[in-house]
Image (cartoon, rainbow, N blue to C red):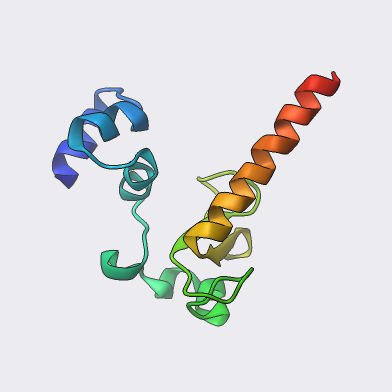
Length: 109
């Protein structure tokens, strides 16, 4: 499946289009293409020293962390100071808050 994902990406398909074709979420497609993940997908903590120091707990609620969140919203900035480990629920909350902030800024202007 990974090979198929990379072939589709090279052809110019978006994450959402690839997700529809292979039956995975577009977030998972993003993780596969950018070569990172957690849990049974074996994230290499050696490349992410800041996350190693944080442990495997969500930085917001202290439950088991399963998602890597980019603080500056730039998924290509994998500097260890830009990454934080979150559980699924807290990761969703952070993204909802970001979208709400962007929407409010658009409405205000």
